[in-house]
Image 1 (cartoon, chains in turn yellow, blue):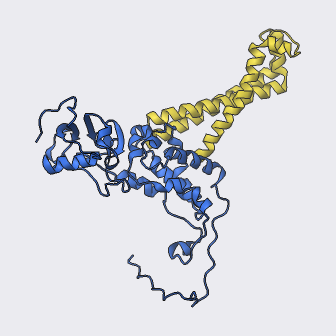
Image 2 (spheres, one colour):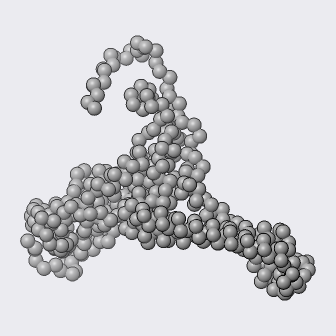
Image 3 (cartoon, helix red, strand yellow):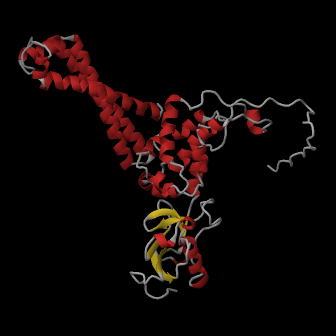
Length: 124
Length: 279
């Protein structure tokens, strides 16, 4: 894939993270703001609240998106730094490959956890 | 041969010229050598170096040509900044003028940098107008319209002298020699933005890469160093945009319709045939 595509995905993921991280922060850490906006429900870290989020398909999708965009954005940045430290063609291939493998592996693991949590939330 | 020991302050009549010298034939490393000169009104750093070469040490090596800031030959580090020696007034530099070869380049001798890598990077971006019609590229037979407004879209970048001051200033070039550099990338944009050109996709193979346009961190030192106002940093950012969204011009400049065979303007004198190609 051309570097311009990878770079533009980095920018797109940054925009997506502003929204998704903002939502995450609001839900998890700014409950008073949500209540002021009229939201109901218990504290974010209460067992019932966690179960409710795990069972909600929309929340699971948002978690998967947040995981994907955060992984891509972070790993693209780390890859850039590493490629500047070690700039030989062989090092570049190793860094690119390792970043891709690591990113895909962590994303798959994270999605599996999200799906599993959705199926078993509140049953254990 | 060194002149009198360098004075750290001027008495108003002399300037100390301190040059970092290097002679590969002698095997020793870099060394400093100093001379004192009388600055004259309007004297440039190049004038001072020529005076040193003529009156003190004929072995001092440096490049120069036009002595008026249009050829780019005399690029060197002067008091910590990459400058054209012919474009830099001695009187603006203080009592001590420290001169060394351009950084980020191998040194051939004294103040003469090896610019081979600069030129090879420049060639790599195909710095010429590219048309889809291969036959027309090989043997041009016609002209292509371009309005003054079209020319304004790229003319700033056409002022490049290939003096390599931007490459000397670039921090990415210092750490990553494989980086194409601001000079080549600005020229890639100059031609891609030319309405006569259809070659952005040809250049993309080289510039749309990690060591191409995306190696730039927007330090801006290149634009600060450029003696001709090219602003390579701007060219690089515009090139990024062109790689994502296409060149600024949607359609290439049309060719002027070919004149009928044997046509001759009324009153025109006979047109000489061009000389035979030599390659």
